[in-house]
Image 1: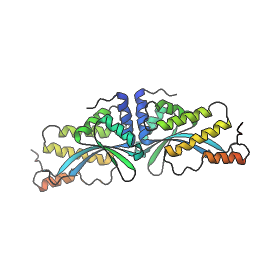
Image 2 (image 1 turned 30 degrees about the horizontal axis):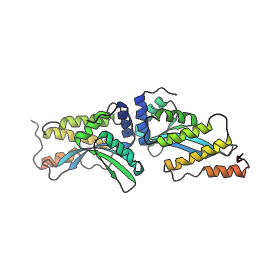
Image 3 (image 1 turned 120 degrees about the vertical axis):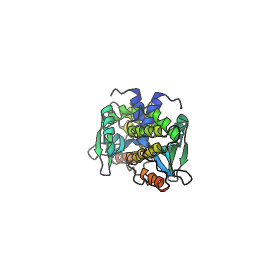
Length: 161
Length: 161
């Protein structure tokens, strides 16, 4: 985990609260046994004029990548369960608006830690659904319901034993 | 000036960098001798769902007011040269994106301190122009040029003596 001063963490927490997005999503993966993966991402958005600022942030957090969009915005994105949760834990003491996001992310992370367990994966996917509400997202189409239907269709749904 | 811990200042600086706006503007005032006032404002924007967060911020900074817009956004605005500069000085050590804004604001403030001086006011208005570029603002219509024309028209323009 990167070493960052407490004041820098507080700054980044404020910046994330103001400008950033914490997302957990179910992504359809045709080549995956259970049809879906859970993807974690943290995104910061800035006008491309502020590219250097996002680069400084990346140098601090030592993860993720920058991408210039065609509309004059730059995104700094950190993808992956492990880097995302590390950064969220780092910022947790200071975040004010994203507290519930981080709490939910930590619960998802606990369910996915260690050996893969389908029952826990399904439970985690239900927590992923919450991000739809936490982010006021309207276009989310992959839900835990879809995962469950997929598992049932493929006779993989965990039995209640 | 409000007492705020260094970590809270760092958080607010990050939040301002991410979400906020620092504006200095020339405002037309028909009842003012010199036709214009220089207005300073700091604005934070959030979805109205996060009203309480902005309220907490207001309780920390002990200035400004909240306003719910009709489009589902809430603005927390601090207007006035004195409260604005106090807050900017507080956040200066931590702000990364708004450094140039704060530097310019401090220069404007120094010119306007003490007894009113028209020459200094005109000089300050030229610095106000810079905010157009700092904020990538396209619709700014009152510039130092307009102030100067007004002063010339009213035979108030300070002579070069």
